[in-house]
Image 1 (cartoon, rainbow, N blue to C red):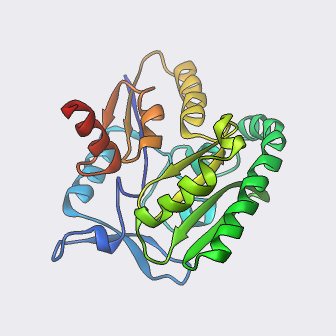
Image 2: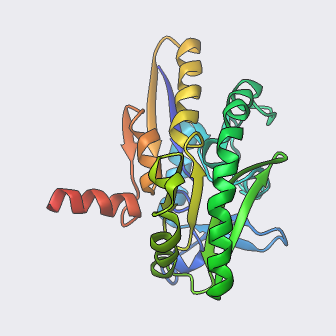
Length: 251
């Protein structure tokens, strides 16, 4: 039986130094454009990678763009899902043209809506210092927007979310959706999501193999839909998704 794991990267397989326990024996896993390390694996995460690489075909499923993914120091050999699901690379790291054509055919209907909301986000950021909005452009295409804050806190991003993004008609009608986790607030067209990209890959794997065993691993609420497509789910402790499930169990 062929086994696959669809694996989120940041805060699942590694994280920034401030999220690591002091004194831990860390290994650098991802780097900034200047070559300095900015994400690290704990001993448990190092063991996890060693264990997974022995028995699974590992498919990264990440919000990273291609440049940020290339700065991850791990030997991935299978397909790669980038930009929250907007782009799929094949094993030779060429763009999956079938998937790209599907996304590009649908994307124009959402661009105007994304830019309309983004104009309001940028106006808010000009009035309130510290917000850092950025539109993500990869493979010569504008995919989505992301906002960070110099304070590095989720609470202050929530003010922008509540005042600008949530009330906007294009968000209310479901054309766009948002995701907030730590110092990262993303605004995306509904057609860009990890679940759809993983479903597309799963269809192909099942055509290739008589039997497929699948795992999904992720830390965020937006990882849950693609993990639900899999036979089993792996959730790091004390992450957003873990905590949301724990709260659900309590209530």
